[in-house]
Amino acid sequence: MTVRMIAILSLAMFLATSAVRGQPAPPQPDDTASAARPAPTTAPIENVLMPANDIGNGMPLEDVLNLIRDTVPGFNSVIERDPGTDSGYPALPAMKLKNVSIGQFLKFIQISFPARVQRIDGPAGPLYVIQVAQPSPQPQPQNVPQPMAFAPGMPGAPAEPAGDQVHVYRLTEIINALAEGENNAEGQKKAMNNTLSLIQAALDQVDGKGDTVLKVHEPTQTLVFKGSPAKMAVLEQVLSTLQPKQDTSDLAAQLRILKRTTEDNEQAYHNTLDTLRSELKEKTVEEEHLSEQNIALQAQLKGLQERLAQMEKRPDNKPKE
Image (cartoon, rainbow, N blue to C red):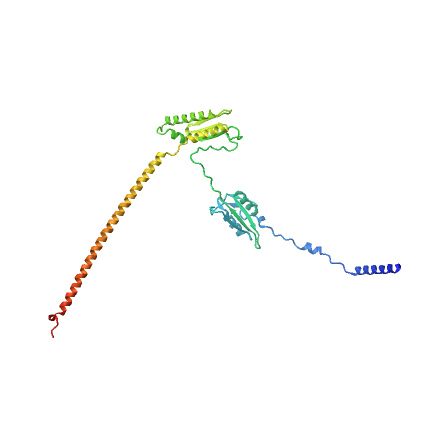
């Protein structure tokens, strides 16, 4: 029994091996045909060089984008401006470009202006949406002496916030206000001395080490200060206090003139209204008189017509046969 089973298993293995050897091998991919097929070479629009090398000063961004759209196939762009933004914003500075791609130019716009560039892909090409917002100017405080800023590296520029500060202040308005009524050189000098005396007295009350330097340039009525930040704060407080305010007497005079003008205009209005009313009354009386005359004339006409009818009825008025 065992010998028979071994013979059957050996025969089955032989048949299976023969069947596998008789099948054809699966086809292999053709490496030659794959190598001959060219790879796609479509480059994105961002890699295309700018069509213009020179951009004039003040040229609107919209004109540059229109030039790119007319020159580069598949390029489209839209500028979306925030409310309050001028239609010509942004205007580009004068530039000379060499081997600058469109992608680099769009990145430059996004960095140089408050702008955001978004790319929307589509079947015919990408659409670039450029969102811009024009920054609003910051309001400047009125009637407050502003220190003149020094550029870094210039003499007088503060090295550290905690060190000595150097600032320049204009004193013309303060001097003119203090010298009012004395518009000569002596009055101007007296006002300048009084201002410096008050500044020095206020600075003496500030604790702290270090010298304070005050220099005055009389031809321009300018004060140069060098000292600690604490003393500079006291100086600016003194100058703000001395800064002339608008004269309330002038406002009162303007108010009186405005009130008088308003009263005169109101009186003229009432006079004109009274004149029109008087003329209207006269016209009304005249119309009433004409109406009465018309009624009287109609009565006379009616009477004449009646008399004429009576005269025609008399026998002597009949025609003779």
